[in-house]
Amino acid sequence: MTFGDLLEERKDTVVERWVEAVLAAYPSDSAALFRAQQDPFANPLGHNVREGTRGILRAMLDEMDPERLRTHLDQIIRIRAVQDLTPSQALSFVFSLRSIVREVIPEAIAGGKHHDDLAAFDERIDRVALHAFELYSAMREELADLRVKEVKRQVAFVLDRMNRSGGGTEEVSEDSSKETTTYETVHREDL
View 1 (cartoon, helix red, strand yellow):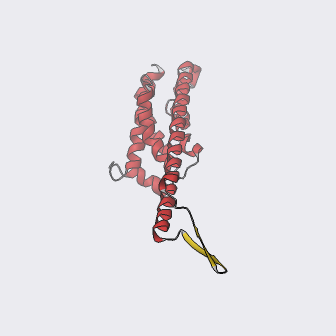
View 2 (view 1 turned 180 degrees about the vertical axis):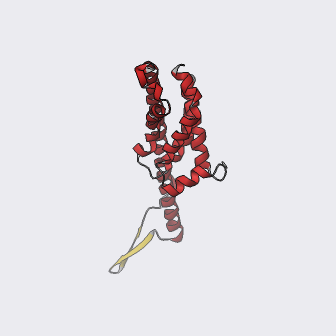
View 3 (view 1 turned 90 degrees about the horizontal axis):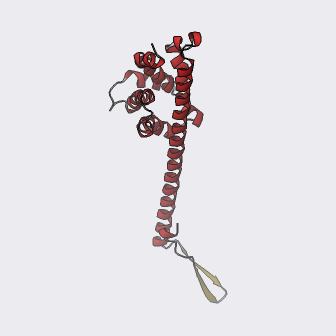
């Protein structure tokens, strides 16, 4: 039996263990909920993790189509990018697949019969990790841009309110002559 056949035969076990590895980054109470609830509407995170890991493994077993791989990675990475996880915590699940495959398919290691196939699969894991890192970086950058835009919007709103209420005008008088200083009106377009 080839390594690919062994992996195909035990893919459900690999996916189950991989889902556990993904959920290990979450607090135990949350992880238990994500495991237990199967409804995709009641538990979108658990659903996306299950579907994403299954799809990633399927893509790895097939032709490694980059678009298909990114679609399934996106299901997991998009969620992890907005959570309070370090980059290594967010992406470590990809590398956990190495040890999972070796545990589920011990004969892949024994005797060195599948050494070349296992090395090729490890290379695929590395490529998946690179795709995951690119997605994670792009999503974190998008989040940072959204935060900056929100701060600009809030500042523009406050300045607009100040300008409308006359909060931007100040009168200063010296001796008998009156001098009026007016602060420039700030417009949203200036931000």
